Image (cartoon, rainbow, N blue to C red; front, top):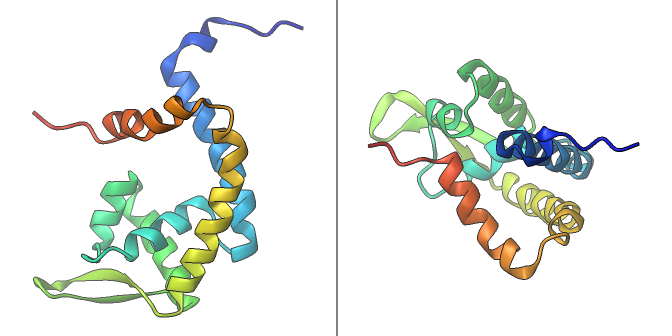
Length: 144
């Protein structure tokens, strides 16, 4: 059966479909670590030198703040992140990876990259090299 349609050339549909395929592979790989793509993203962002606030996490991940609270609650209960007072604003909390969170992040990242490899191997080397820049331009547009 030929399922080709106008959607096969629609960039928004193709991005959504590629995301769904990538998230499915990512969630399968991260399950062994008790993570999903969203919780992995929070853990990875918490490892930044400038620990993000929960609001910054929500903005960066384009999630509702209540979703981020639930993700941080789970990671904190597992001892992978902590909430600490923001040095620049004591009323705000930053999310920081813990000593136990670092090896957990590294192991999860290793398995995630291995799961992504078959997807990315479909691309030519030049396509693979160009993809992050193209996606970054779409995901983080510069405000005028």
